[in-house]
Image (cartoon, rainbow, N blue to C red; front, side, top):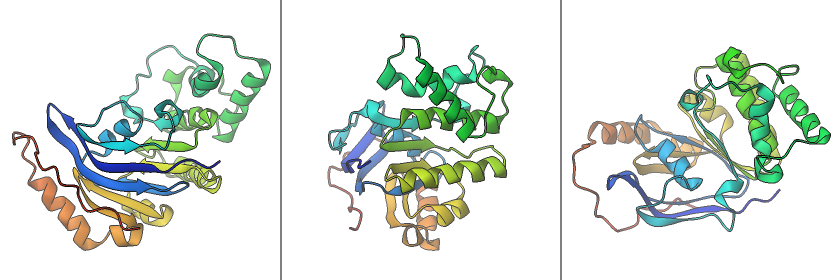
Length: 254
């Protein structure tokens, strides 16, 4: 599996003309594993939504190297999903196969077997018929990973994948990320746990609406860069005029 690079060229993504991410230039290399960190409201989720084509740039561009946004695997924040809808675990996992199988035809025996294997791979063997409303937070997150596993995408975006789950579930899912990384997939994950980032993610983008640092994790997450990100967050003015600076921000070092 050889995904293309994802290249950002002076990217600005805005809401009501006010940038949530602005002047971001850099490159997610094929097969890289990057954490996106920063203060609350820093534009981390906005960046992921732009990468999958859900939000369009206000200016600048995203070059996906010919990869369709629908071919990018996306795991949204679990808290943003409605779990009251009467679905079984197998039905949610099967959503990962829609791009290849289509949403309306009946699943084959081989596809149903794949669903069972995916559920077993994330520790949910025997949960196929279980209603999602009965799952714990950790079990539901495992289910979302099963869906992502079945999507089999070369590029994977994860938004706070370990939020509000227990340490055992986190450890199990981190092992799955390592496996995907070892297969050559590009992984981009929004995270808050800096210890986990330093332990598991080779690269980090530190974002505070503007890029603060982007590179090897040890170099991107220093006391100085984290302090700069905090100061920028404290200075945000939600009523300010739209940003009109058209000069590209410094690019990520090669």
